[in-house]
Length: 79
Image 1 (cartoon, rainbow, N blue to C red):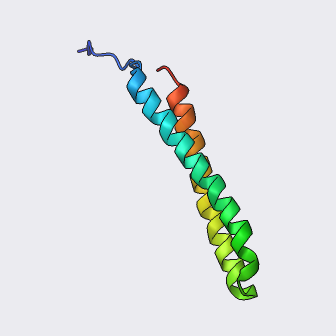
Image 2: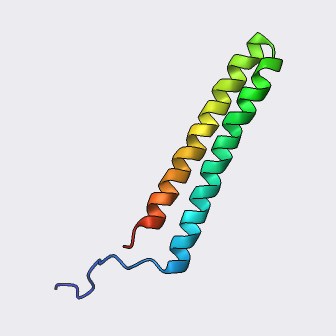
């Protein structure tokens, strides 16, 4: 018995697209601010802590910028 319900993509509303784009911009800006803070404060840290802190900061920065880019792409899609 065939189903009459087809899985068709629905168009995103303008409000949801604006929310995705706004969230993406916020995440990318936070990632850039985190990069700047890491550059400023890394010189004041000891050698042992600096490696671990910058490694952790780079991972978080990657997640913020990557997540922000994903949100921006999701917000630009019409379907």
